[in-house]
Image (cartoon, rainbow, N blue to C red; front, side, top):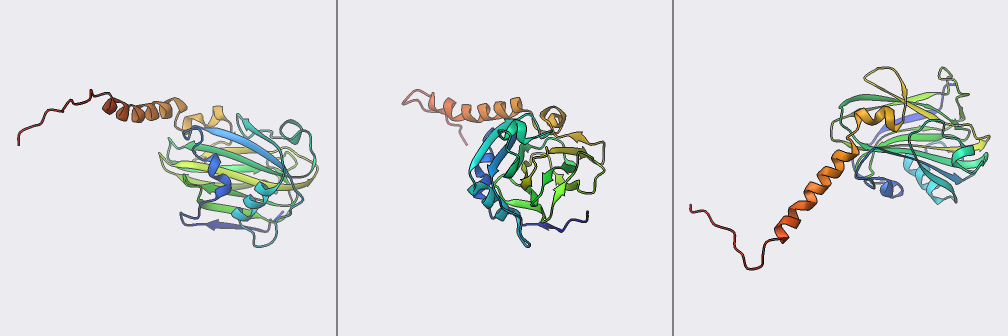
Amino acid sequence: MDHTSTWRHVARGGALVALALLLGSAANALSFRADFRRSTYAVPGGADFATLMAQHSSEDLILSTVTDGLENISTAVHASGVRRDYSVLLTTTFRVSVAGAYTFQVGTDWGRGGAAAQLDENGAVVSERVIEDDVWWAYNWNHPDVFTTTANLSAGDEVTLAWVGFEGCCGGSSTIRFAYEGGVYQPLTKTNFAPYAVPEASLLWLLGAAAAVPARRLSRPRGTRYPTRAL
């Protein structure tokens, strides 16, 4: 299928409040989440990622789950078995350790359209792709409804990738795969993506080191002066 879709690159700024709580909540350690809500919304012509996020966030929550990756995300497991009239938001947040071009391949069931986006550490949209028509990959990576996006990432970047879609029927599962610098696709899971993200232990060490600096300063006995150096 030749999707009616748009691809936009957006300047930094214009933070999305709907995703603010997803950013930095785990000190930018590699994390994944699947969020399902009740919805009859269909993506209209000219919509952008922010519009779709606002719509998804306004709907009644079915279930929100921290996962080990974005592989075989199904309503049977992650949305109490709901199969009709829902929206789904899949996200991963991480700090980049290996710079380069990353391609993300999406197999999903969005009967009413959806969008993919890359966001920076402030929640501002860096790039987005909006799909306005029916997406159903039929569990076949060669199916024309499978689509891809690419992100050129630098070491140290704090990144959130998000995919939001709307479904009428009938609750097919979703899997996202990634490839680094044109390599072989792998499911986007914590195990597979860990070599490309800053380890959680390193982030916690950095936070601890930063927190220790003011603590040492506060430990100086009251009235003690630091020695001065003659000029």
